[in-house]
Structures are given as C-alpha cells and as structure tokens.
Length: 131
Image (cartoon, rainbow, N blue to C red):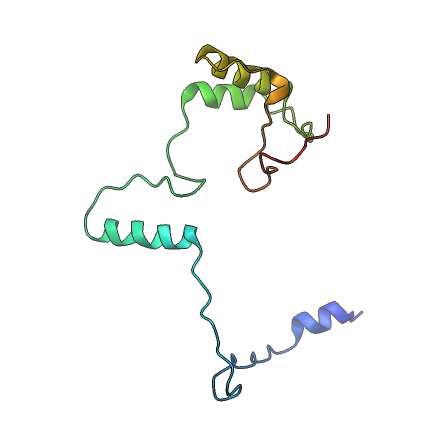
C-alpha cells in the first residue's frame, strides 16, 4: 500500500530554489550569516594541523582525549542509572562539587550547586531552579 510518506520518499528529488540574490531584491542588503564559534575554532585547528602543529582541541565539548581509567570505572558502575536525573543534578555529584569548593575556601552546600549534562541544556546561573 502506497502511503503519502512512501510516495514522498520515492519521488524524484526536486531542485532547491536558488538563494536570494541582490538582483531579486534590489535595495535590500543581505547580511552574511556568521560562522559559528565552534566551526571557526574547528577550521583554525584544521589549519594548524595542516601546518604541522600539534594541537589540543579544547574549543568544544568533544576534545577526543582518552577517558581516565577511574572515570571509565565510575561510568561503568553507573550504567544502570538510565533515567532522567533530578532537575538540579544528581545529589551525590552536587555534594562532591560542594566539597570541592569548600576545601578551596568557598563555603558551599549541595543546595547551591546545579549540575547538568553539558553547557547548552543547563539553565543560566541567574535562573531559579525548582527543588
């Protein structure tokens, strides 16, 4: 049975419309789209590698560094924890982070710590967190 989706997927691809040009929109300035900071960093690293430089990529979240054996063990031990974490982060992690700062002279409690899976999905520091 032919469905609308299978019809669309089996159809010949249609050419895309040409990008807007100054001729099609006289009097309108088309601003260039800026390159993302991550892509710009990747391109700079590629140029340096091509020139023979040794680089350690730390401009983005996936540096390609080997995972420390202790971290591998901890990740393997937590493999069964496959549910969403609390909004403010895993309590044990928040306790450890608070202890880290307290040992360095900044009195901190776990209630003052928010952890997330990365920088993008985390709330901004000024955002209130639900408890």
